[in-house]
Amino acid sequence: MSEQDKQIARPVGAPAPLSGDSSIQPAGSLTQPADPPTSTPSSLKLTASRTETYSGPLPHPQLLAHYERLVPGSAERMLARFEKQSDHRMYLEKKVIDSDARRADCGVGAGLIVTLAGMGLGFLLIQGGHDVAGTIFGVSGLGSLVGTFIYGTKSRKEERAERAKLMTGQGADSDPEAG
Image (cartoon, rainbow, N blue to C red; front, side, top):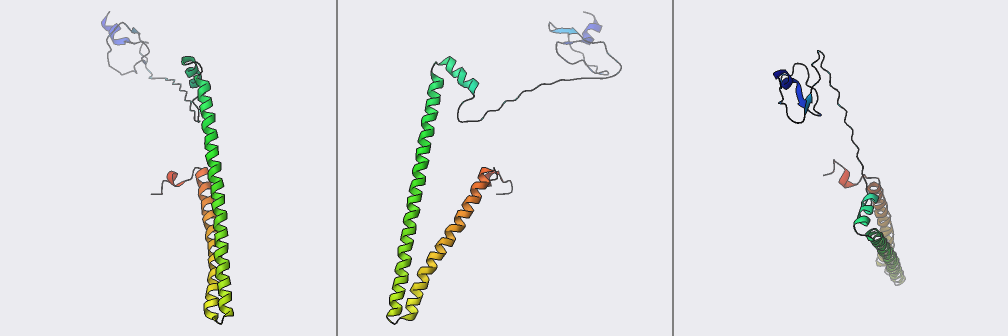
């Protein structure tokens, strides 16, 4: 191979050198003659890229099919396991919701009993001639009931606002200024 061939030889797939590029690549088994140098440097590079993302509780359908080819019946077992886990999760969620509702009902009942007892005791004290003590018991019983309902309403409102933030992706973890 002549000295001129060595100067213009380049590996297969390598871009043609720009004019003024004096690098010399040795000729090898994977070389081809380069394009003759031109007076205007120009380069065109085309890059194609494909990105595929998948998110879900089950493997990607192609991966699931691959598992099925490797171990026949595995896809069916994975789907059955997913369904079983989903049923279990829904059962637990229902149980938690039911127990929360029962606890809330018991709390309301207990609050009603305490409030009625305080107001009743206040009424009896007033009837017995203890006006100041009776008034304090009556008002404190009613005040505790009103305070509890105001606090409960406020905390439920804050909880709903926090859930809305989490569902829209604006939770505390995603806030860059939170710290």
